[in-house]
Image (cartoon, rainbow over all chains, first blue to last red):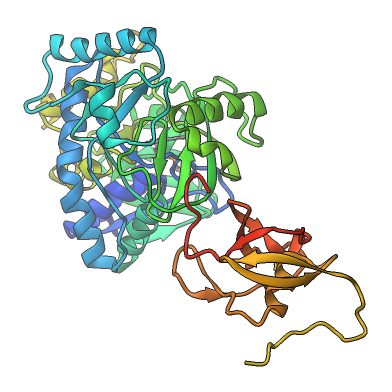
Length: 381
Length: 101
Ligand SMILES: Cc1cc2nc3c(=O)[nH]c(=O)nc-3n(C[C@H](O)[C@H](O)[C@H](O)COP(=O)(O)OP(=O)(O)OC[C@H]3O[C@@H](n4cnc5c(N)ncnc54)[C@H](O)[C@@H]3O)c2cc1C
Ligand code: FES
């Protein structure tokens, strides 16, 4: 049947917005079905790193995908600015993971060695840095810092502005963004295509992309897909603005383009993001001031917590349905980092109708309890 | 230049000395730092942290944060909430607070 929409994207967070933007840029008629404004989204709570080091430990294709994301970010940021006039402040000076004692240093060394042992991506560049070299890059570090690991691919961005640019871009491309359209059910149609049942009636589309964050778990079985999620909570501390002093992002500390210092980024199993927890903030703040003793005097202006979109094994899931081949699912933890790949690469694959062999390792078939209905993209393409 | 603000003559409180960017200024005991700055006749405008535009104290009651000033070496203090003390060293902030100040 003829469809008004080429693709319905379920979810308007960073993943949905990136994929929809990429599809609309390729001339696809896209409708984005999202929940209302008051919903809590990981896309509004994150730490805004475009982070590569250590990603994909245990899954080499994810390490490659992350390096490629960093390589694609400059072009992605440029395309957003050209279209919307919004500078998302992407910077890639390289990033450090700081170690505060010899045990941490040894553990970090093992992570670095592990990345090479599993076959690191071409030009990976991850290395350990001595305290002496670190002092040249970060003159303000405290006496407890013993060393760090460094990756040239690491950077950061203004992620809220990126999110806004994607939505402004979507509008400029003529995509149909519909808030307050929570999807209850999706029905694959016998001749192909899908009917999506929302709070506000039916929507039809030739293809459907599930990008509903942790909500993917519930929706995936409607179209023969599988998305086992295991969300965690994270907390962030924000200080008042200070003159630029930190010219590299660290794994848990960065200075934004506007001067605030952000301290992240706890990992907790408690899933209530209605409040922040003081003991957690205390540990984070303590590490931050041991890293940079001068932070001691800064005033904290905000703290918040957010729920991470997390698959059960922590690696991204990209998949295509065998029983309803026009249905795709995408979910991952690092949606800021991977936004460039979602917009520029994944969107093209979805437009073309199959994910392709490169994304086969990301299929949810890797989970032992995956349903039979799953087929990987390479077979569907 | 006639200051826009001045102490009323009937105000008989004793004066004390503070320093504004190194310059001696007479304030009255019980003045807030912001009140003393406004009555000093000096150009006490700070530059805002992001866009760098000039700003002066506004609400004088702790809610707008327009009065940020460095007091005795500590940046981003709300001048409208802090009473002057003899010998206090006040610096007008140029843009963002400096780390360590
Ligand atoms: C504290 C914290 C720090 C982080 N730091 C970083 C970082 O430094 N770098 C990085 O790369 N990533 C980071 N992340 C992760 C990143 O924010 C997420 O990967 C990303 O935002 C996920 O985007 P999403 O669109 O999948 O999910 P979400 O932002 O949760 O969006 C999902 C959307 O789907 C909608 N939805 C759900 N169910 C339905 C339904 N049934 N119908 C319609 N719509 C639905 C929701 O309303 C929502 O809009 C961090 C996350 C947290 C919480
Ligand atoms: S003048 Fe408004 S907070 Fe000080």
